[in-house]
Every structure is written in C-alpha cells, then in structure tokens.
Image 1 (cartoon, rainbow, N blue to C red):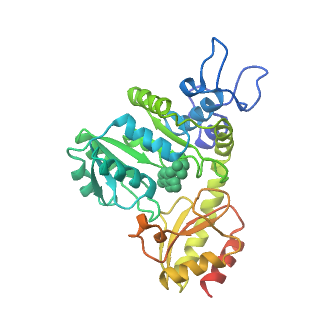
Image 2 (image 1 turned 30 degrees about the vertical axis):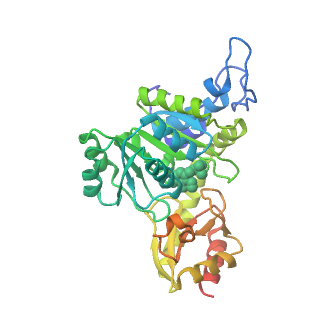
Image 3 (image 1 turned 90 degrees about the vertical axis):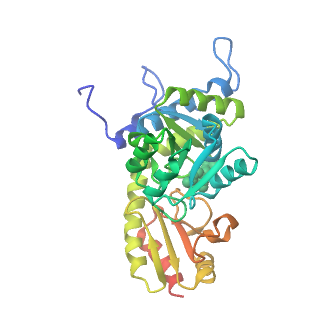
Length: 350
Ligand SMILES: Cc1ncc(COP(=O)(O)O)c(C=O)c1O
C-alpha cells in the first residue's frame, strides 16, 4: 500500500495508537503505575503508554496532538489555565458546567465574559474584537444550535483571538475544528468517545506546540490526570465509535421524522447529523416529566453518548432556566429503533 494514501477515519479509529513491534499485544495494556524505576519517570508528569495510546488515536482523528485529562471539565479548566484569557466570548446557551466555570472566574474578577448567540455569526465576530478567547460549542448542549465554524474562525483570526471548540456532541468523526482554525478542540470523552457510560475522561487537541506544552503543564500542576483504566476503556470505546455513531444516527433520523409528525410534540431540534435530539412536548414541564417517568427502554439519566438511549428535561437545572420547560434532550443509542419508538410513542400519546 502506498505510504501517502490518507486513511479514512473509520480505519484511524481502529488502528491509531496500537503497539506495532513484533510480539507486542494488539492493544496497549493498562499501565497501573505511578512510579517508574530510574530511567523511567513519574506518571503525573510524564504520562503512561496507556494515556499515550488514547492521545495518539484522538489526535490522529482530529488532526493535532491530544492531551487526556481526568474529565471534560478538567480539560475545560486546563484550557482556561493554559490560555489565561482576560476577555472570553461565550455562548449564552451551551453546556452548563463550562458556563458555570467561566462565570465563577468572572465572579472572582479574573475574566470579562461576553455572552453571544452562537448561531449569529456577525454577533460572535463583533464580540471577538478585543477578546482573547472565543469559546464555541457546536452543536450546543442542550438546544443543539450550530455555529458556522469557518466564518467565525475567520473573524476570530482577524481579531487576533483564539478559538476553542467544544466538539463533544459532534465527536471527532462529524467535525474537525482544527481544520477550521480552532486553537483547541475539547471533548468530554465521557460521552461518545467512551461510549458506554462507564468512565469520566476529557481531551484537548491542538496543533500549536506552545499551547500543547501549556496544556500539559496545566494537567501536571492541577493534577487533572486520567485514570489508567479510564484511558484504556476510552480507547477501547473509540475503536467502535464509527459503527456506534452510524447506528445511533440511523436511529436518530427515524425518531426525528416520527417526533416531527407527532401531535404531542411542538418542536424538534436536530442538526441533521449526530445522535443528540432535543424535542419540546406540548404540556410543558409536567408532560415532559411524565414521559421521563413512564419510559421503560429509554433511560431517564443526565449523561449522554452511551450505547443506551437516555433522556432528560434540562430546564429543571437552575443554570438552564432559559431552556423551554418541555424540552427533552435525548441521546439516541443503538437499540432497535422500533422498540425505542414504541416506548416514546406510548408515553407521548398518554
Ligand atoms: C458539551 C459538554 N462539554 C463538556 C462536558 C463536561 O464533561 P465531563 O462531564 O466529562 O467533565 C459535558 C458534560 O456533560 C458536555 O456535555
């Protein structure tokens, strides 16, 4: 095979980060060590081969160098530490945890925040002028707004700011923000990358060597290191991300079409790809809560991205008070779609 033939993401997901010497195990084993004999090093400062394998694979998919963290939030906190911004443009409607983190920095007087509607490119670009970091999340959690990454990147570049993209909902397979000029891509690997609701992990990816070094320092100083088992499981999950995502998207397309036609559903938000679907039921919070209590296959749960379909009414969180009361955010899994629909339909029609 010619060396310069680019591999498809489905192949990279399976092959990147594998040991390759004669006699090696096919998968990088779990290195359970904090300390190495002289000639080796210390795990918090120098990592392990288990972390490195995961970082190699995620970096290869995103087109940069990856750093693994204890969780998505640890990765987000490391970005703030690494870029030390004074002025940050943030989406008004986006993942609550990151917004809360930045609001906390703001309350402590460390940072000025400029909230924007991420779908309004002109507003984002004008807010970028005089800012240090433009924090984009796309699609957003939980309203599934989509940002025009290339247009925003051009404006952010012209303003001399840096763009961070939380790409958790898109996964490394549906969008490659570094190609659009992002300085850092952020993933909660807890979600689709891990894919089985059994671990917490976070990842940052960058092509900027200086930013890479600062992110590694952030992990070292803050001690936000991934667990050995978690890194192993996240890479094991990543190996099947392409087929899981394909199955999830197939299910999502069917459910979106049927939800749109259902008289009990007022609105459906779906960006056309991915496994996240948000829909608003008639009857507000009461009807939405009743659906969450009634479902038998769909799991009422707060996290997402696993093989199982999960659902949650987001407005119940104080920080998500802006979300419509009857909005249900659903992470579509890989179950049989007719079983999923029967479960949803029975509870919508009640
Ligand atoms: C878009 C997004 N970014 C970041 C995070 C934080 O990730 P973690 O829970 O792994 O810390 C989440 C978690 O829900 C998320 O949905």
